[in-house]
Image 1 (spheres, helix red, strand yellow):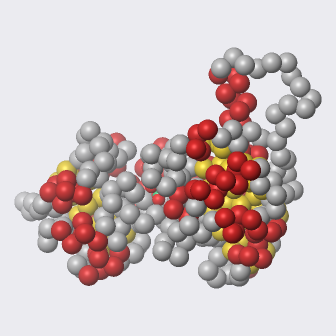
Image 2 (cartoon, rainbow, N blue to C red):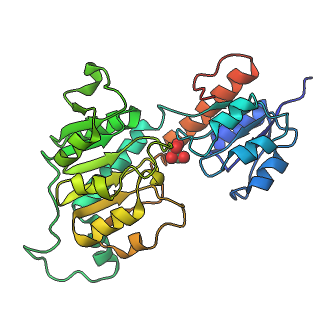
Image 3 (cartoon, protein in one colour):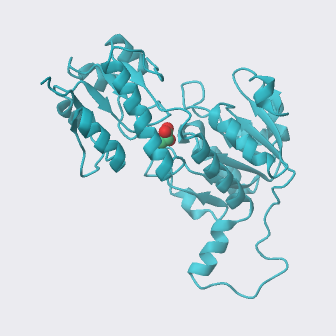
Length: 321
Ligand code: DGY
């Protein structure tokens, strides 16, 4: 009987995914679900053929350089790959994959939840009920912004951006988008493409971020760009915290330049900038864009499909490096 390949699993994964891993590989599970340090990752990978990290495991160039030679693949349980240094992996001949497509619906649902929650001040209303501080109903209290018919700008019209646009059309929103390149007209469904972000920002009552965090997009939403948004705009982020300059966003929320922000992702998660918590006009969630049972199973199976392909000497579907 041939020995099963050892696989280092970064975090606890859904039961069905761990069971499939157990059937086909010799998994090194993380039953305590702790976030491994760089040293632990290197140590635990000793003799492993592959690593299945989540976005919480940072596979920087330094970590990848120290990985044992046994490691042939990094099959991430995530669509985002800003936690993996692709150039370093390439240099060591390590194949890297991610899990696109399967989390687009779930993440777009959270984008819409944030959009509605921020616009309609859901967090303030919910807090009133939980703290028993709901006074009399008032014709002028708790006034939010109506979403229906407004203009939504999308930065990054990839899979999640496109699904978010389709859902937003259910509210008769007019969609604008900025992307590295224009997408097929069929996929646009009437959305307006802006080659230049500067032409889109002034027409965004709502701005939703869906681009990956890269060297080019880090700090993209800075003070200068926020100033180009209409007064009273709402910012939504389900992509990565790194795309936003926190000081600039917090200043605009404090001054009233922006009406509100709905954020699921943050710089330095889970230790977010505490000023976000102090603001009433922030609707905050703990990075749960892909957190549905269906999607987390699908992400795991997609990561394993990639791993199976690599182990069988085939090209994996979602190769990044
Ligand atoms: C992703 O897949 O990138 C999500 O942010 C969860 O990690």
